[in-house]
Length: 395
Figure 1 (cartoon, rainbow, N blue to C red):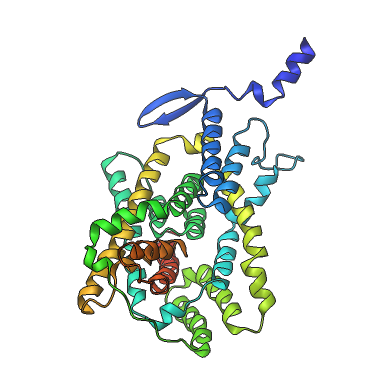
Figure 2: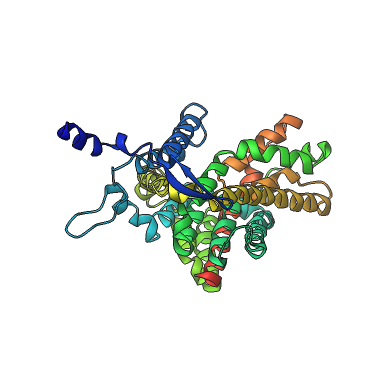
C-alpha cells in the first residue's frame, strides 16, 4: 500500500483536482484551476482544428497551455541548484529576451508586398488611424486603475493597449519588455482577436458605412517600379529608427525581410524566411506563450479585464480606420471605398481579405484586395511605431 500511495502521489492525477485560491473581482475562490485551464486549452484546440481559427498559431498556444497546466510536469520550472529547468523554460527565453517577435517580423517582411502602399501613400493615413485603438485602450486601462476597479500600472496599460493593433508579435514584444507577468493573457487576447477578424470586423464595417459607400469601385493602382520597392525598406528603416530608436528591432527586421524579397538577389533567404524560419519560430513562440497561461496567472480579475479591453481596443481600431476611410471618401469625391480603412489594423492579410469579401457582397465587380493591402501593411508599420513610442515612455 505504501508503494501504491507513493506512486499515486508522483502522478499528476493526485494534483489535478487540487483547489487553488483565485481572486476574481474581489472574491477569493477555491477552484480546481489546473482542470479549468485544461478545459480552456481543449476549447482552443477545438476552435483551431474544427473551426480553422488561425490553427498555425492557436494549436501551439493551446497545447502549451495544456502542457503547463498538467500537474508535476514542470516544463516551465526554472533551474534549481544542479537541476536543469524544464524544456519550455529554456524555449521561453526567446520571448523573454525579445528574440522571437523580431524574427517573426523578419518573416512577415519577406512575405509582404509594400507595392500597394507605395502606389497609394495616402493609405498610410488609414493605417495610422487604426492605431488609435491602442491609445484609446491604454487610456481606458489607466482610467480603470484610477477608479480602483482593477490595478494596472502605466507599463501594463501600454501592454494591454497594443492589442488594439491586432499584431500578435508586437504585443508579445512590448509585453515581454514592460509587463512579463501579463504575457499569457495578453498573448491569448491578441491572437484570439486576430483569429476572430472575420467575425468582429464585418458588423463594425456595416454599421459605420452606407450601402452606397460599400459599393464604390476603386480605380486600379499605378504600377510600382522595382527601384521604388528596393528603396522603400531602406528609407523607412533610416527615417523611422532615427526618429524613434526604440522601434529599431521590429522595424529593422520587418524591412530587412522585405529587402530580401524585393532585391531579388537572395531567393534562398527569402524562401527560408517565408517558409522554414516562419514556421519554426511560430512553433517556439506559440507553445511558450501558451505555457505562460497557468491557472494562477490566467484566472484572475486582471485577465478578464484584459480580454474585455482587448476586444474594445481591436473594435475601436477597426472603427477609427473605417471612419477615416469615410473622411477620405468625402474628400476624394467618392473615389475611395471607406471599407478599406478596416484593413488598417495589422492582421495581414486577414483584414484585407475581409474587406475584399465585404466589398464583393455589395458590388460583385468590386476588387478591393490590393487597395486594402496598402492600409494593411501600413498598419504593421504603425503598430511597430506605436510600440516604439510606448517603450520610449515606459521602457
